[in-house]
Length: 396
Image (cartoon, rainbow, N blue to C red; front, side, top):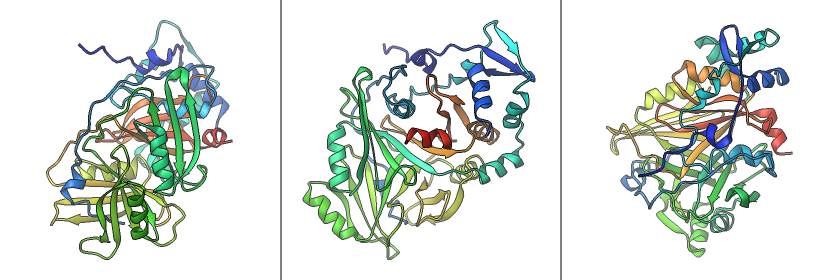
């Protein structure tokens, strides 16, 4: 019988007292933190692309945040990548608010905390729309870090931004992209020692890369031994030239021919079971805009492009609904998207108001000052919101 997974509290060995503020319970670290910081359409209808085959088995990974971590930044994002998705933040974050017979009351921070917990739906929408948000990076697991880095840099033209190895925790990670992380979207690759395969599942779709010459890029990928799953050519029913390729772990990339853009890493596509419900959630809880929606009855699917800015200048989230399909297998390979915010506390309250599930209550990570909150959308896709100022410090 499989051993029961540990909760995040067990892994991080969190021990905290609770403070009562206006009848509400808060971990003491949260109160301290508030005091300290008051402030292109592809052919997705293609059956092979829509329902990719699953691959091999999953393996349990490990994670603990120790005081001797060489990188505060690394500790933050390893939390979302080195632990399998089914185990990570397994609905136990509420235990941090449990009273163990040691409660105190304070009034000094009452107004500050109340400002973050008294949102109405209207004020939550206004907050989300005015918050300084952008997609920071996407996190997923790979079976051979050096092999993947080689493919991304030599075939896809990305740059290796950072790479770290933490042998005592048995994992390594690398950040790659087309520009600096303080202004561009990036991919965070995580390799867990001894795990050479992951199950991508049927829910994850693809990443999108904009390039001014798809044919040239495909020729380069073929020359390097890469796998092309859709030859370059105009999209069916349109004129945009696209192609599909796979990386060494089976993650799909859609190549889109597009004139010069400040953000070549342009899409993350995920499949959802109720598109209108998802659009409503991402608009209200995440403050995203519906940039484009298109129904393709011939191929029995509909897509919606969601984001924080124009599609030709920013990375966007592409949500895909396949007629009649309500649920997908998420596997254990894809982890999450990270999003910047000016206030993780208000962000968490807004997400709760619109039906999102908070899997990690807002506050600083133990041992470091970076404040985050983690949540699930209606389909169970995970996102982590990161304090903008703390994220900037992590990149210094």
